[in-house]
Every structure is written in C-alpha cells, then in structure tokens.
Length: 151
Image (cartoon, rainbow, N blue to C red; front, side, top):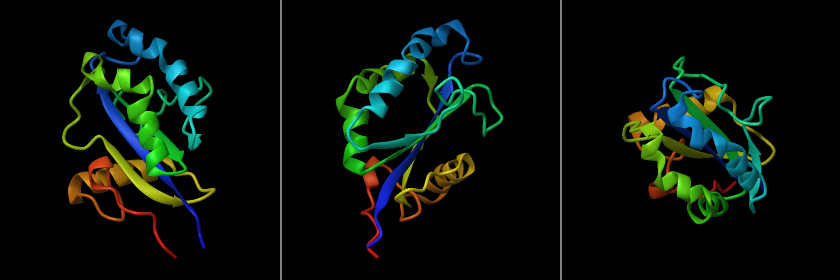
C-alpha cells in the first residue's frame, strides 16, 4: 500500500516593506529557533529553505511583502502538534504584530506520496485552488481535514 505524507503551505503579508524592515525584527530573530524546533519535532519530514536556512528569499507572488513556508510532515496530527502545541504557537498568536490579514485562506494542506516534496509552484497552486474552490481532496485545511488516500 502506498504511503502518504501531508504537505502544507502558509503565506503571510508582512507589515514591513520587506523582511529587513525593523517591524519584522523579532519575527526574523526567532526564525532559526522556530525552524530548528520544526526540524526536531516528531513527524517532521522536509521544509523549503534557501542558503540562509529559511524560505524568506522565495518570492512566488512577486511581492516582497509576502512570505511563504512549505513543509512536509508524516501526518496531519504531527503537523498540528507543531503548529498548535509548541513555541510556534506563541508566534501564531502574535502574528498580527508582524502580518496583515491575508484574506480567508492563508494555509493549505494536501497529501503527497512518501518521498516526494512539492515545488513552490505546486504549493502556490494548492493554496489558490483552496481559496477558489474550498476544501476537497485537492487541498484542505485544519478545519476541513481530508483523510489520507487509500490505494
């Protein structure tokens, strides 16, 4: 039986003009801490990162105020534990200090075959799909979880 992992993208529109803006300092100062926590969390598989060990240099929306994060986890549960039950939660609760509202949908999840990692374009397309069509097997969120495919 084929095994799947959960992939996710989340996007945010910074209050700063770019990642170097002083308003973003505390967020940026904790990126390594949060990324290290993710990589050492149960169920972590992979995350998008550049030579600076984060994803802030990627700009798929051609907008310096929008940052993205893409990662892969063993399950929805292990992703949820990281997002909602670790130090990451403190930053999630404070996101309005650094980020504007991104609209209704700023995160999307989908199932990927074990060993496969999404491209940035695939992740952006999944978020776009969820924004336009709502939750389905194509893309979903924590409120509307779709079970792992059975093959």
